[in-house]
Amino acid sequence: MTDTISFNESLEKGTILGDGAMGTLLYQMAMKHDTKPVEELCLSRPDSVRLAHIEYIRSGATMIQTNTFAANRNKLAGYGMTDSTSLINKAGIEIAKEARRLTGQQVWIAGSVGPIGRHLEPIGTVSLVSARKFFQEQVDALAEGGADLIILETFSDLREVELAATAATSACLPFIAQMAFGHDGLTSLGHSPGEAAAAMESMGAAVVGCNCSVGAAPMVSTVSQMLSRVSIPISAQPNAGFPTMHQGRTVFGSSPEYMASQATRLVDAGASLVGGCCGTSPTHISAIRDSIPTRARPKKDQLPSRRITISTREPFPSSDNEIPEPSTFSTKLKEHKKVITMEVDPPRGFRASSELSQLEQIRNAGVLDAINIADNPRAQRRMSPLAMATLVQNRLGMETIMHLALRHRNYASLHSDLIGAHALGIQNIFTVMGDKPRSDNYVNPYTPSNLTTTGALNLMKSFNEGLDLSGEPLESPTAFLKGASFNPTAKDPDREFRLLESKLEAGADFLLTQPVYDSAAVQKTAQKFGGFPIPVLIGILPLRSKRNAEFLQNEVPGISIPPEIMEAISSSSDPRRTGMDISRRIVTELSDIISGVYYMAPFRRYESVIEFTESLDFA
Image (cartoon, rainbow, N blue to C red; front, side, top):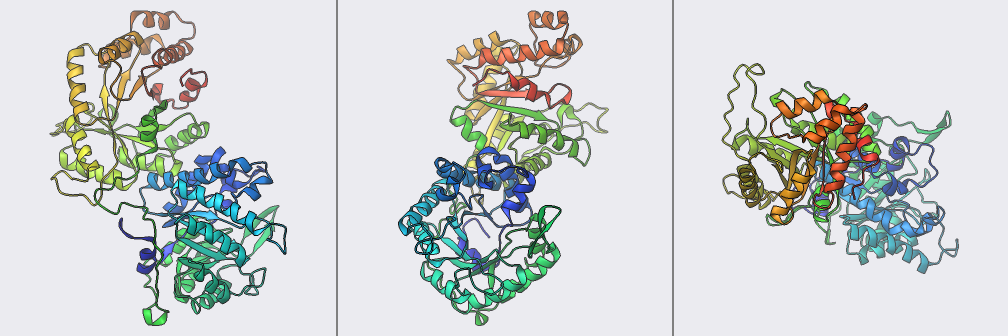
């Protein structure tokens, strides 16, 4: 798949790998004892849904389906959630888009639409007019959210498929139409695979296929029968075998290895899109990925000629001048929303399990908008910020701000780091010169950098315009949000202002400050500008003790602690609490002129950010 290829062209070039069961995975992750529909998690637990998408993308899926299968007005009515229909569907798309962006992978986002949940008249009581409205409402919300295509799945009634297909066509989106066939080879209403495939092709489907109800082996015959009746691609998304009950739980018996072997049979039978349904997991999808990536499509003389005529919306830049989506963090700043970020040091070794475990707890608390990933703080040897940022985004689904210390980089290495960041879905970049290495940290502490902050900012600005270091066109523009440092309490304010002007001219989008303990000095600085010209996130590092305050005041460059703050900490019977209170008060006093908080956890006690935000007056 390339940036300019359409969905139909992707099908012609080779097999597309779908994801697996969302409901199965989300029940395990987030709602084992919850009575709400799994689709509601798009509103209440978006992090869990995003993480599920990320798991499938990491497993190799090149098409993911939104967590909106039953998010139609009729089904949601059973939970008193009809007013949330549009919200859930739009949220489902946004979550999937965020997962795609965080992983940096090119995947298609299919808006999932299932049956309305009741039979149509004359068998049931739902009129065709009402059913059409239900589908149109859901599909319109998915289209407005930015779905690349619609996938109609697990249908048993061709009339219902036609109503949903009409809604997708009305929304100008290509669609996949899939029906569920039992072990007798028929849908529950008696439609055969060949009959269903031909009918769905006539409705304008880009792909027709089968999903759910049966495991992989019976689906091979279904694919073959469909292929004999249509000239468009076929999809197959089987269950992981037949479900059984074990210790009160529904379990599926097909192993990943078995599913992978059957996936090759499905491709041989003519399937162009394979994935999984109930009971399948990221492990199953990973195994299928490994079994089919290099398999050639059946030769043209073995298949009916393909004639794909439906126009599609391309989810990726189709020209060098098209700008990709900005990061969610960038959007929040542009919408003048208050944000809170926290700095995290990468580990000294190969494993980040301890840091990720702590961050998982903080993610679940929902108090942060992004994680700042430091770059060799204090010039100490640590995991690269690019690796750590990728781990945080992929494993936790949390947006990051990657710090790039320029002192030990040159333009060539920075160029490589930025290409890697863009490829991995890291869009928020904070540039800083970085700490000088001590001679006892390295055999040779020489730092050969020819970089400045303004040079790095200008390079990212060029990348965003689609040009590289040499002025040559990139494959596509980037959408980096460019950050720089600013010290509003600098001892030489004139020099600091000159530096800030050069950073603004180079295209800085936001500023992070050193830890601030003097709100009056920050207010005075803001007044000189008539308000800060770009968003400023004020640095907050809660003091823990008198000794801690004295160390920061005397040994850390750029930090100034007013005498009254020093006295308050020194005389306090509970300096840790006093330090927290001072930090909250500073944020409150500056809330009218700052855009957010850049929290630095004292002594890497990252969980302290939860305590800090509990009674914070900042909106």
